[in-house]
Image 1 (cartoon, rainbow, N blue to C red):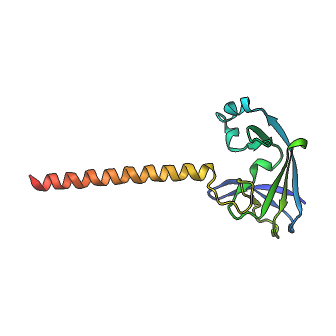
Image 2: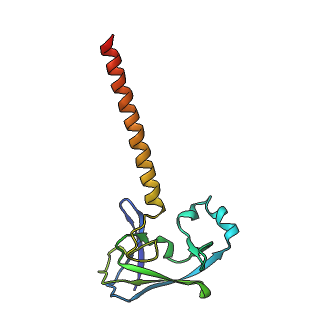
Image 3: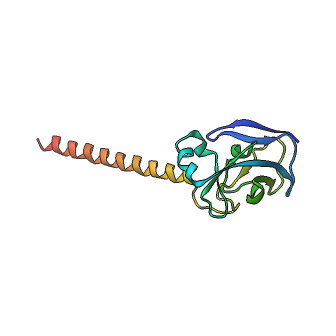
Length: 153
């Protein structure tokens, strides 16, 4: 079995496999570099912010997953799941259902495969869209006010 990266429109790079995968197949076992909570604030200021996982039972440490681990894209309907083994510092990815060869392998960043809570980048996108809509609404009302003022003269 060979994993590879490929660009996915609107997502960046994603993980793919050259072979069909079946429900329960282990796709990858990744070692994890554990960073204590005091280091997370530093990681958050780097590009690593988008690639590490909360780690440990309290979720306060960072798990920098090695291998293809940080490259699996998010889906609210993923075809794979990940498992964390904190005591062994292992992150394991396995198929959740049949995945045809050369199909993107996705996981749910919320950990639970059916969890629909928006993840951080969707929350950010929603905030930006609301801000943009508010700005557009403000600009439209200013334009409308200008037209009314011009007509009144």
